[in-house]
Amino acid sequence: MTAPARPGWFARLKSLLPTREQIEAVRWLRPVSHRVLAPVLWRFTRRSVPRGVALGVIVGILVPVAQTPISALFAFPFRANIPVAAATTFLTNPLTTPPIWVAAYWVGRWILRLDAQVPGNPISTSMAADASFLDWLLVEAGPATATGLVALALGGAIVGYGLAVLGWRWWIVRKWRRSRRQAPRRD
Image (cartoon, rainbow, N blue to C red; front, side, top):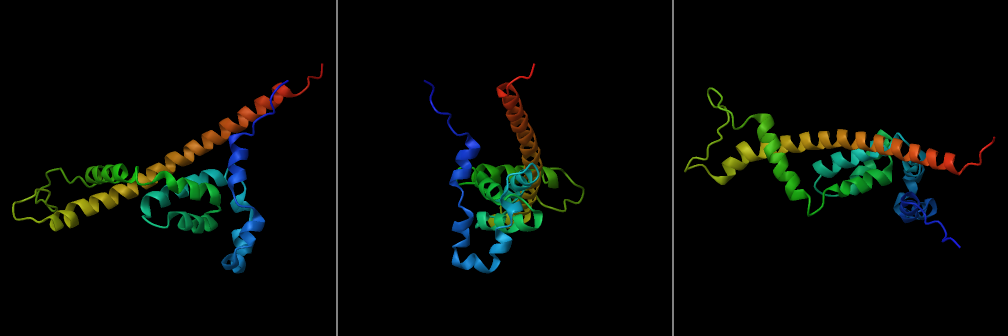
């Protein structure tokens, strides 16, 4: 006797999401529930899922606090999947944020060419003995980190969108092939 089929990861993920009735029961959402509960924002489609991934990556990297509610708010105008956008913001967490910020600093230095010798030296990159930490922070580290964070967010969103599109395609092809194998043949 065979064991019953285990539900797939998608079915398990779907079981963790709140139901429409649970969301409608939230008192402070009642005035906007018709917008919040629009089916296009909750359906897992080939267009809404990659949008949600890209949006979640951008918000996760650029917004330091309240990432999940902000990604849900931005999902409305972009017609992105709200659960995917909210879940993708967890890309940044206490373990991944420090490496992301260090990478952002180095990417920003490279983009702004802070280590290049420019005639006239418009941005001083050397730490003189009398230069303070605040000067370094405002002149070099701040602009470089901000520029790097924007670059990483945009690059991560593009890569995340592409991977979500490819992953969706792979999942559909795999599902189609499985159903073709299980379908009775007509000979």
